[in-house]
Length: 297
Image 1 (cartoon, rainbow, N blue to C red):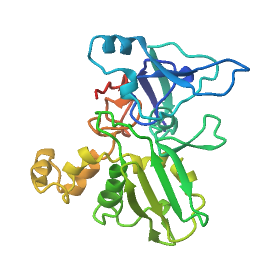
Image 2 (tube, helix red, strand yellow):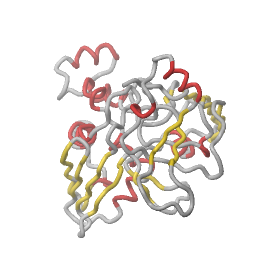
Image 3 (cartoon, rainbow, N blue to C red):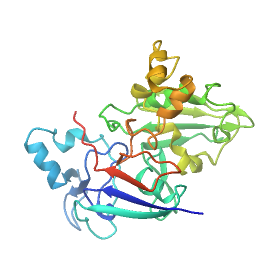
Image 4 (cartoon, rainbow, N blue to C red):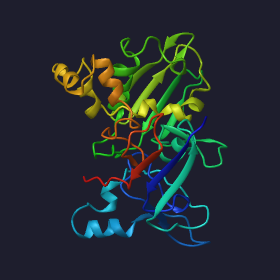
């Protein structure tokens, strides 16, 4: 029997009319070009950012740096369908059971790639762009410079390599490799080219890989904040036994799995626009997200 799950999300802008920055949001923003109108000769265009009034007040009070300093170098911009929405308010949703994908697509969908609002094509998201080799075996992702986790720590290629080495390849955490990251049973190879470039190589052509990354479960690769999660991994924390005892679990594997999900661990930094404040599981009947966490420099 399905249960009805109510969702409350406190928001600072109506989604249909805001500019959403890929990765950790630092406030909903309005973005536009300042330039000439029709018939104006082509030339340099100035990018101007505006933000919610409550964020402007925090900037004026010295509690936040200016909006330009909080954004990635090239933020992802979502064009409004009609007009910029109304700031503030509470967004309420009802779901039939906890397995509904609606919740993830509306509040937790920040992958390297994503579908456009019409679900007609795949777009770069946390990745600013990506390249595919001619044989579809190698995928190079160029991350947006300046992206941050919800606690303000930069999101870089190190976080993706950490997911690969600490989680994906670890045989204690997984009895087998995820089929989405293998070809004919051979796991992907992940390499860091620089702080904002990561390369994924497969043993065989994998033309459908971008489609997988745009799926809801494609967020694994962008959901392992190294600076936070390494404390729960035996290969990175020599004093992990203290945390195991403190958490009251049997071993580090159970500790890791209890911490490696924003659904069950609201303390885990995320690149999603809202911060979960309640545990979300099969017994949930009401789940709430707080307004966007504001980060500093």
